[in-house]
Image 1 (cartoon, rainbow, N blue to C red):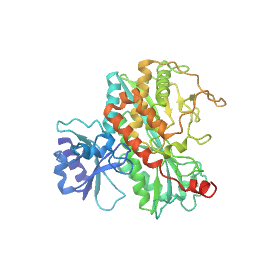
Image 2 (image 1 turned 180 degrees about the horizontal axis):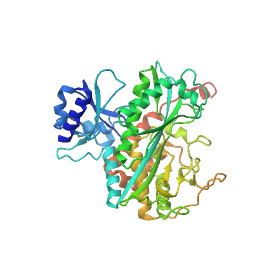
Image 3 (image 1 turned 45 degrees about the vertical axis):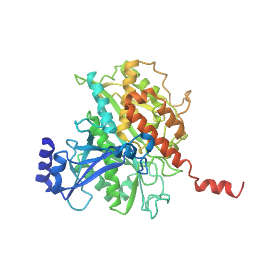
Image 4 (image 1 turned 180 degrees about the vertical axis):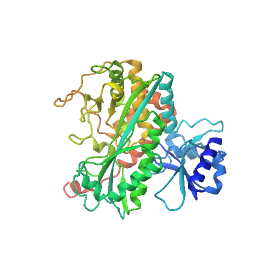
Length: 446
């Protein structure tokens, strides 16, 4: 804990003693959970004296316990110890006063990170690459919508005034929200997030941020999940609402999270590069990700709404194909030569847990490098896929994940079981709700 003490002292030297510290981790659904710690009580955090029930990693999307996980009150609701993550103490500039935030991990009494930690799961995958003498280099792209503030959570979203039509790459859309966009970028810089570009996307009030590539995979995942919190916080200060929901509008594009991955060896060379064509390593990486995509689909589309993205001509790939610089496929190869040789994974919605998505993609790459499956033919711009479509059914994705040995190996048997039961519980609740559209279509006609 000495390193965090030095980090806290450095924060105080720059910003003063914080009024409070938001100590948080992200659960299986990437919902932030944790505690507010008064600045004067930081000693508890420094000494590891804070605790929280281990089941806080595993509620359903409504925040409720899921008995089938075997966690929570069914086993006495035991506590875990909260440990700060080095390098993550940052100011929260969109809030009044001196507010800091820090990421935490939950450990047992011996200091071992909980097997329920999505961040801990990703760390193990990175360690696996390190044992092979490899370092993944990753970058993410996140899409989100800004909407008018709603009176009731049941209301449908509406675009802000002046952004009611498609604004794809239109500079005017950025200008109309210039104050908000400037505050988002400024807050991201204050928190050390390596933003690369901000653009207006196709949907009304939709924007995308690109982050610089990094060989610190955990930092990339931290950045993605914390950026969602940042955007929501900044936008809320302007009496608007931000959402990373996969498909908030039926008639407009959904929100995606694209992930770029390359691999560096101990000499700093990109092992996916080839002087000509697709290298053997890149081919194996692509094959591994495609081969595991169906089994891991639940990670890339974790919610009922997630599956509304997977429609023809909807900007979301619907079959497990790859292609050279082809944005209509699941795995795009933007470049195959030199340091920029990489794959781009285009399946995930922006509603995912970034830790789990990166673990799934990297786990798929490992599977390919270790088993060396044959690479299927690339899909050209005018080609029609011969592959069976990815499922558009949430329950099928849940059960596919539940039966997957690959998923069990990547995420560990405990988390695999817990995540499956969380999703089964959510599906049981949400699929029983009769939506207004069914009453409109059937009640008076049948």
